[in-house]
Every structure is written in C-alpha cells, then in structure tokens.
Image 1: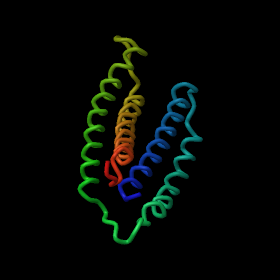
Image 2: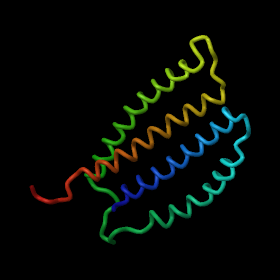
Image 3: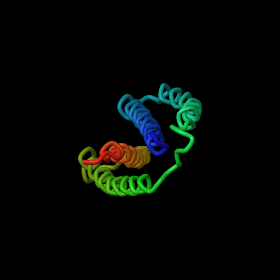
Image 4: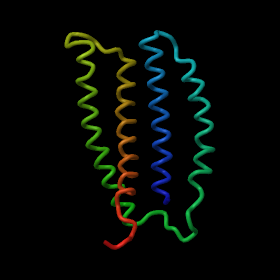
Length: 146
C-alpha cells in the first residue's frame, strides 16, 4: 500500500467520522431542539486522537526504496479530482433543490443550516475523491500480463 492509498483511507475515515458528527449535531439541534453536547465532546477527543493516529499510520513505508509518488499516482489523483469536481456540482444542485421541498418556495432556511449544507457538500466531495482514488487503485492491473 503506497502513500496515496494510505492517505485516501485515512482521509475517508476522517470525513466519514466528520459526517457522522455533523449528522448527530444536526439531529440534536434541529430535530430535538437541544445543544449537541455529546458531539462536542466526541469531536474534542477526535481532535487530539487523529494526529496521533495519522503519525503512526502514515509514517511507515512499505519499503525504503518506495517513491512518494509516480506517474500512475498522479494520473489517479487527476481522475479523482475530476470525479470530485463533478460531484461538487451535483451536490450543489441537490443542496439548492432539496430545501425547497422541505420549506416550500415561499419559506426560509435558517442561517445555521446553510453552513451545515456547505460543509456537507465539502465532505461529500472529499469522500467521493477518496473513494475514487481507492477504486482506481483496486481496478488497475498489478503488472500481470493478459
């Protein structure tokens, strides 16, 4: 597993954890009408735990001769950025049309909800980027001849 794969797996874990925290906070704030105390404590623990986990997870190379990245890694990253860019537009369209179903055309969206929507679009794009990187590494050949 090279450095790009490790970074994608770690980023995917972080973004999914953040999406879980945001959904818990959203449910607590807007459905239960309380302050999200549990999500705040959990995120505080995560802020201190994630750098420690990243240090041990990302530091070890598979072999000392392994380069940080090569042409294949750069092509995979470019294709993943394209997939994330397309997903941003799809998610922005969804973020603009879905609230219309809940509040109607004459309704108003709370200001707090707008920042959560934008963070959700960012998290969705980054999750798609990480998944696109991992799928491309899994679908390409490992050097065997056909």
